[in-house]
Image (cartoon, rainbow, N blue to C red; front, side):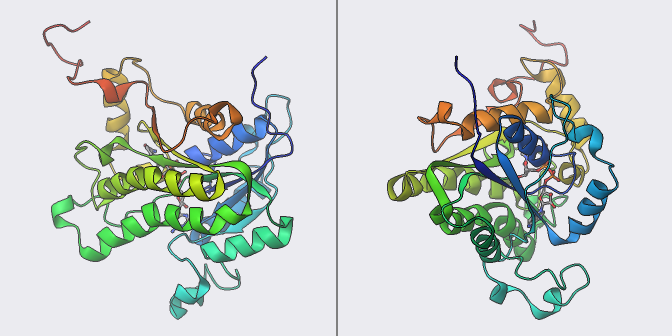
Length: 302
Ligand SMILES: NC(=O)c1ccc[n+]([C@@H]2O[C@H](COP(=O)([O-])OP(=O)(O)OC[C@H]3O[C@@H](n4cnc5c(N)ncnc54)[C@H](O)[C@@H]3O)[C@@H](O)[C@H]2O)c1
């Protein structure tokens, strides 16, 4: 029988700070298939995340099919805007939410993983993070700093993570990120250079797949997910309208769930997908194939 068995495998999910986003759902799916899961959390959200966990506020969503609670092997601080601690401005290092965390750069994450588990010790890396400080601004009005910040955190961080984490990966390991259709088509309201960041992420997925495949035998894919009202997506300001529009106009006319992204991610991270790399896989209820809205009178509407 075909099944996904991650027993003895270790996953790192970067971009989990609550139970309301894709990262959490993916972590849960990977754990359900038997993986040990470490997460990496943005320092400004780390205290809140730890508090939610400790106070049992996420116990309902942590419940696994066998009745146990999803646990994380480690929770690491990570600010994916920085490759090394030397890149971090002094005032940020000394600020309230970063002080005392040690090395929260991508390099620091590599060092902590190596110290905790040795090398190689990883099989699956999920990049489920993004940030565009000017996401509410149309691209035309986006500042250079805002545009570059969106690209730095949301796209370059994947390049840096593949480069720095590849040596820690065991044979046949897999990298997976999360993209959005606004990287290929115009989605008014998804501004601040975030559409550019997703275009870069998808292009880099192809190039990184080639390079990481040839050098390390690793796979790199991205899931282009439909809209979902996570914490990050709520910052866009129009997420509920986006969810409703897609649900109404998709071949499968219902809202996408995070669990559906979680199970697709588990498949792509597994040996069942050993022939898939460099690809953007749509998990969007089929919305991307549509060329005409159907939530109004139109010829040919089913
Ligand atoms: N929600 C959607 O509609 C949607 C659709 C398609 C793709 N995506 C993508 O899915 C991924 C996960 O987002 P989500 O919507 O599940 O929301 P989310 O809020 O669960 O995840 C985003 C995470 O990024 C983290 N983050 C922000 N800046 C960071 C930094 N500098 N360093 C490290 N972490 C940082 C946040 O703390 C948060 O945990 C993102 O890449 C997002 O663009 C989301």
